[in-house]
Image (cartoon, rainbow, N blue to C red):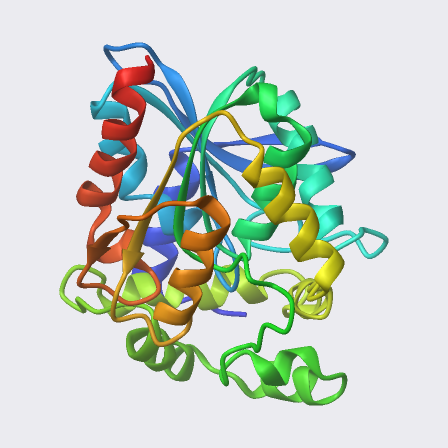
Amino acid sequence: MRVPDATREAIAIHQAAGRRFEAGGVSSFVRDQPPSVGTGEAVVLVHGVPSNSFLYRKMIPALAQQGLRAIAFDFPGLGLADRPADFDYSWSGLSRWMGQAIDALGIERCHLVVHDIGGPIGCEWAVRNPDRMISLTALNTMLGVAGFRRPWTMRPFAIRGIGEAWLSTLRPFAMSQLLYLQAIGNRAATPRREVYAYYYLLKRVDGGRAFLRIMRGFELTDEKQRFLWEGLGERSYPARIVWGDQDPVLGLDQLRLVQEALEVRDPILLPAKHFLQEDHAIEVAGAIADLAAPLG
């Protein structure tokens, strides 16, 4: 798979800013940037699909400037992580691996930031490890998982046969158009050469087969939602919601469910689509730092 030179450079810059590490027997990639000054409390940035740690490349230095240790890793099957055939790609499996990654990176306690399906994955770890949580920030995610309907662009990937055909015919330009339509509002801030990086990081090595397994591992059950909501309802740490209010993927109906689950009355609304990290990295990083400031 030949990657255009400009996109190859964007991926190379991202890769050079991080390192490889191993957790749970899986080799992955992490960007782990300590601050030059400040407390250095850890902020774990959890991605969803079809993204990876590349999504947080603008926020990581912004958080470091706020005196926080910014950490973003790739889940198995995505980004620069390995894609083992025998891995459990369900939300629970990814959550278990996330805990192993946090341990491998030497993180005792953290501010947790979740996005997209990183919400149920990350919050499962948070519910099981409340003593290791300092705060929780939710970015355009879903916690109302019972009966959740995938957005139309993601539905084909959940269907065997159709998902393989859809993915095999998907090309960089088409995926970039979809991301501009649903995820990225400011094209000048994220030019097409960088948007193409999402395509090549999704399909690298295995053509996206692990991604399809993740898409088919959604745990959209009453039991999962009850577990998350009950656990989050018992938390002692603060929570904040920062939301792109022009998101056609996870709209205001999902925002209301996240508010209910976290008992947060006043979300911070930004004029952004699904990838608010692309359009408003500094504002999002500021909101996380503001929540962390009284606690440090």
